[in-house]
Structure formats: structure tokens, C-alpha cells
Image 1 (spheres, rainbow, N blue to C red):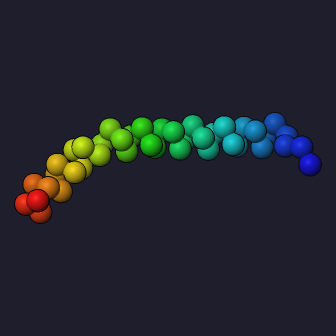
Image 2 (cartoon, rainbow, N blue to C red):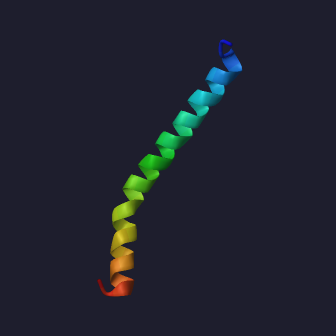
Length: 42
């Protein structure tokens, strides 16, 4: 069973979403860690 254009589009869309989410998380992580450290007194 060969994947159709719709399957490819769904896969690409999912990959783009995943990449964007990973990028956002990577950029927000230092601030998040700093905030947690400030709150927890780590």
C-alpha cells in the first residue's frame, strides 16, 4: 500500500509541528529552569 499525497501532507505537517514545538521548548527551557530554581531555591 503506497502512501497517498494526503498521507505525505499529514506526515510533513506533523513533522513541522513537532520541530516547531521542539524549537519553542529549547528556547523556553533556560527561562523555565531559572524560574523553577528561583522558586525552589535550588
